[in-house]
Image 1 (cartoon, one colour):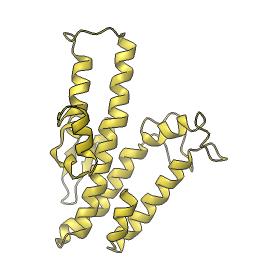
Image 2: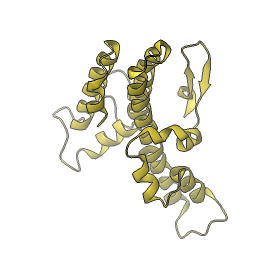
Image 3: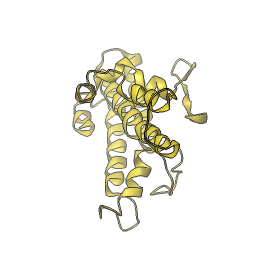
Length: 187
């Protein structure tokens, strides 16, 4: 994940997060839809990690080219690993907001911001609508919106505008410690 994989913690320390950690964290089970993914992949709790490992395993028989295998790994990381990690952060933020522990309350906004970072990514930049070439869900939505005729007049995906609105609204609710509306935003 590059330079953005080091996270500053509230206690002043740092935490390094790898894509493998995101793909195997047991805390993903906080996401209501996680068990659906697990069931789909034959009860494999680490389904996305297993998929990446099998795809990269030189001893695994394959009928696809290196280019196709690379695309499979990148798409798995984008649409399964990072997506589920972002949802986990959203539900962690909600749980922290609802906690009676003041440290967890303070951590809720940080978790919410991490979810935004995972879905939007760092390559989008600060300009409205971001830029072309983003690698996270935000960039993928922008890339695909033309094919599905769901772009705004400015060329961004309509879902991205909704996502940004939800993240700002959720952050405001967290700041006010108004936790119930976060459940609707998470859905």
